Length: 632
Image (cartoon, rainbow, N blue to C red; front, side, top):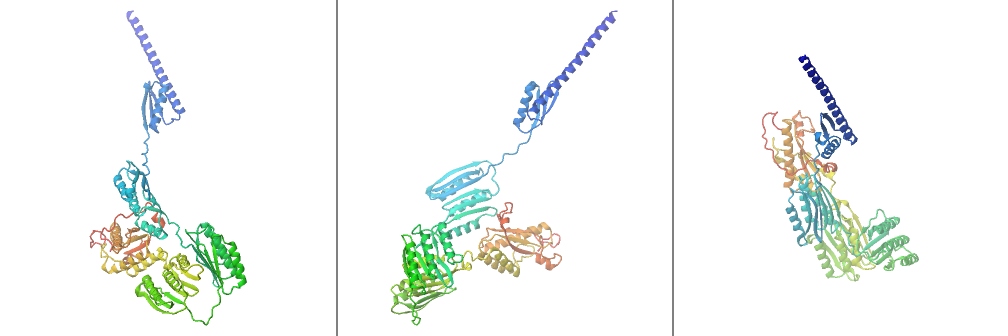
């Protein structure tokens, strides 16, 4: 009986344990599901769908990859607002963040008469003290305003070369702004004259390192024209300016429009300083229109003095009418002197002095002078201007010449010196000068000179032809012409090398002399020296040999004092054959050096290979095995 009672009690406790276990398990599962669902819903509501939620008993684990550390912390906070924060297990990771982009390094340099200032951000690796000392050496006592900052990031490619070029260029830029970036430099500057502008641009472009883009904005002040001169002429051959000056662009357009309407073809006018009146264009246009009404003649305006000479065929009545209208139309400051020449006796002997300048620079002085002193003076003046061994004198002294004959002769010789070749004729009532020049402003300068020297009312004629081939800048051959000329020389006298090496054979040194002479005459060129081999030997060895040979040619040009800052030496190995490599003749043709222009798109390519050092000779020995030896 007692055993049955104990069994009953045991079974009761066992049943209670089972019931408790089932109830506990149910409760845990209910808590897990409630916690997991609650946290997941809260995260989804805040857009954190990337987070994974898993409940294990009382623990709630969060996993997944958070975009940022801040978002990860927000996910933890959101879960902690649903369940006890102590129950939240963080198993989340954070997406890798991109490295912080380095800053844009740049320097702005401003230099003027007040001193030099520099502002910008440079890499910490740049020697700041050295840079500032260079600026101090340029500014002198004016001092340097130093606003440079540094950042501890690696210097970008091209930064050091660009900054070094800017430091060197500043010595030539007393008034300028220079902007420096990696691989890019912009220079804005002012020069004293057009000639100085051209020289500065040429010097800077030659010196810029390879791989650096250079932008130039160089300006020159307007020239000072003294006297401020315009001369217009109408003859049976047509209408033209011997000189044209204007004080503004608008005035120049007005004057040129009037001249074009009068029959001038493609006239040009120099805008400069020194105008005597803001109504200059009004006076010029009125004078040209008066000349058109007369039909022929010339008008010269030097400062405020206007000299108009009509044609001998003009009637007196027409002359009086037109001149009267012109006097009424001119602004107050201008004074008019008009002249109607009388026909000359054709049987009278010529009273004239002549001087001729040949294209070779030889000068002959002939005709009449007023006295012995003028003969000696004109000869000495010509020798001083053209060279003592280039002047031939055959003048004679006669009486009855005008009192201003000496002034006319010397002014004419001075004007002749502004031409490349020409002829001067001085007569009692006129002076004429004709010839060729390489300066587009020569006619204006000559006319201004004669107007100032000969005085008010003087009659003179200037017929100067501008030829581009005589221009020291525009007369240069084009880059394409230079490329073709170099190619012709390189074809006629091939550049050959000693077998298996980069040493130029002595027989080709004459060809190098000819090519150097062409390049010097051509001026600045963007040129690539290309080396090629045949297909014998290993490709890698042929490529290295062709590079060494191209660099040897570059060094030979440097030895001949050719400016090669804009040149590249590139080896192409056995690429681009021009003949069959299966024959000896073809292989000989393929072993060559070519000179090619670098076109603008190639120069501006930031990925183009630069040449920091050239001239390394290949030390790879040649062997007798065809498969292993480089092509000759």
